[in-house]
Image (cartoon, rainbow, N blue to C red; front, side, top):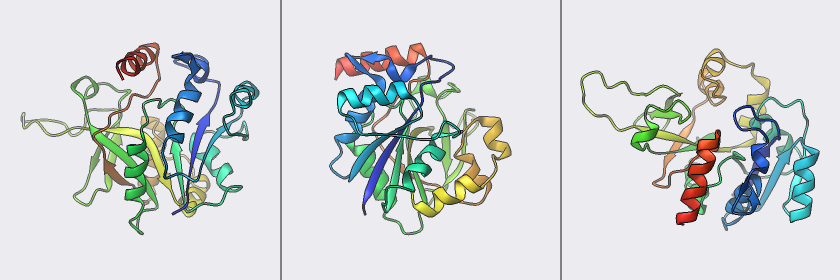
Length: 239
């Protein structure tokens, strides 16, 4: 499979202003993510997709491959879809621009999921750390016995009513798509569950499009707040 990774990156962010340009070990966050994704030998290309002239200028200065995309996009998936119209591939991998702890094993597991010809959409989960189980910024996922997602939520799912201590899995912000799934996504209206949880992957589930989930032991931390940023800095320092 020819696989291309696209990293959507916009400058506007509410909880952590201009987070794509916040520095980690002397590099902007978006650059840390780009170089982490580039370390995978399984990718034909890695492209930053942005609507920001500032981010585009930083990418040119650093030699990071980037493309300008429409400012009208409402999600990273829509931004990736625009790039897919210009860059042919069998599989498109969407790595959120705020996932600096991405490792090559994440990419490898995603592509393994997409070896299944039934998989139009793939993503990852990892055993949830105790601190992430009640955290609404850490999205949880429940799957069926065949590895297909039943639901994603910011709530603690499954609910442990009788103290049976279920296994909790955290969803990681990496996705793999085939082109028809991307084309379908942008044609569908925003779904009710998507609006409620602010999780765009629920649009697929509400419209009957299965999401196949691969398990990885490699956790990640999405940078949404100042606390997340400091947590990532500390993890990378220890590495």
